[in-house]
Image 1 (cartoon, rainbow, N blue to C red):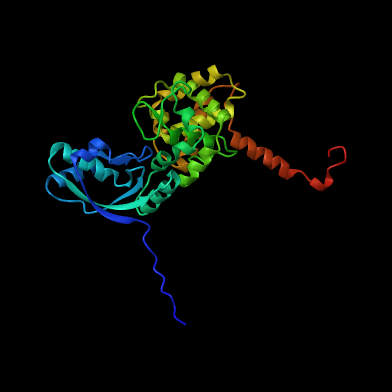
Image 2: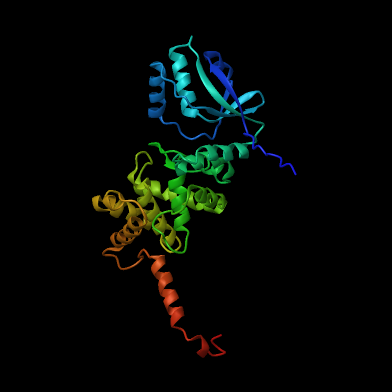
Length: 319
């Protein structure tokens, strides 16, 4: 019996293509809206090498759709070529294309992930890639509907989606973990589970944050540990403390206190838990009523009380 040899074929075709200034004008290459943030340093480095006649010698990954090459991998190189052709408009840059055809957006995302498995991707890069699949994204980033500007990547006048939503997720859990722990795709999944009631709580907190800690721009209290801990304290106490009381105490005892600011500088699980505990002490010091509570300790005490009950000796009346 003759064995038929099976050949596994590549999923793409290859083509050498010379990019010229006219390609930039016509939009031969279509840039995806969900591409990750570009590094200006990387773009500059590639441009300088091109200017010296040194090619990057790596291929572009594209999806040929509706007559356009949708650029899946190669964004830094493409931006560098655009910069190079702006400086030398009569020149051309030859590239090797790996061409896939007719892929939908989900397939493009999967392919992008496959090509970048060996590269370090930040959680913000994953948010950028999947943001349109997160139901709360369109509302929380609409400044007409949300009190502060929310962005994927850090900028002086905004809070990042990861810091804000991550702080809310861990503050809503029965026990405070100190920091968000999970893979980037875990965070995307957790974010997908949130709805309008969650947006309302985040908006309420950020409104009170502005009154207590001041404007968003370059605000230390929007970094991971300070935001995680203050939101947790707010979540634990919003039902029994007057908002004005919390705002005033946050402002007077934390916002400009050097020790409190230093407590918020370290990051991680232990740093978050320690800062939360210290902030509670600072907020309650010298006060005898309307104290801030620690829901973790209350839950521990409730559990301890339940463990002390002898279930077999409960009377019919008690049941």
